[in-house]
Image (cartoon, rainbow, N blue to C red):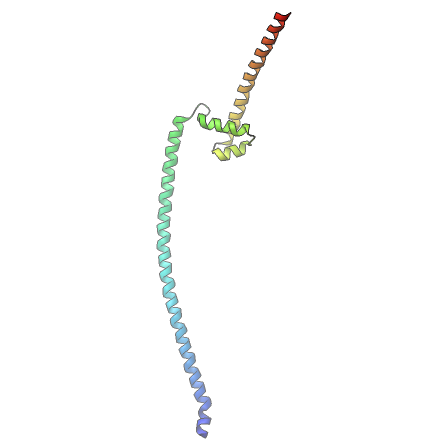
Length: 149
């Protein structure tokens, strides 16, 4: 029994060493399994990335085709100012509602210079029209004065 007590520290040391080795090998196996799973996930993600990149490229090509078709169709529908009549009406309506030219340009996707030009031309035309209407009213009033006089 005395020999057992004398060997007890060595037996405990050996048992601890065996337990540590088992723990180390268990952790090592888990790390390997994790590495294998992460490599598989990385490969799947790379495949997904390649598929998504291909889809994005196809979408970009389709967008470019549609924009080209839109420009071709838009060129046949444009009026003298470069804008079709519907778009001109929308620009002028937004202007009458007090929208700034920057906002009109942004919402309708029309260059800012075109919005400014259209608003100025419209103001000039309206001034001419208003001047004609005022002179007609003055002529009518003069005619009435002559008849009364």
